[in-house]
Length: 90
Image (cartoon, rainbow, N blue to C red; front, side, top):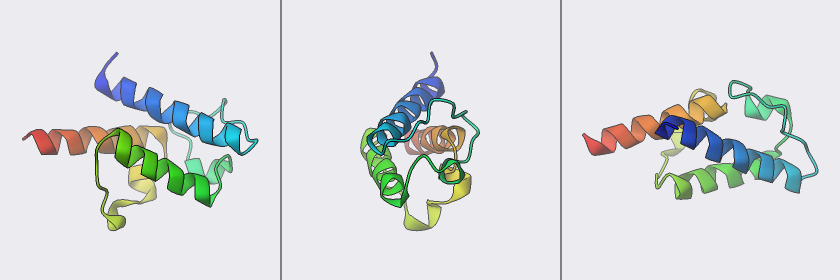
């Protein structure tokens, strides 16, 4: 499993955990589905997801980078984490 696949799996599991805690089902969600559009997470869950993401991937995300392009889907979130990790390494 690549780091990207591992990141996607962690993100998927957290989304499912948050959705389940809110009595929603995210099991049919794909990696390209737009998270806010699905309605499985409310606004507080989205904030919890971003907080979890920062802790899990050891990132501080500038407010202006919290966008649909960067955090709208599992794929976008995994890409953002990998891009930031690669920038920090170089």
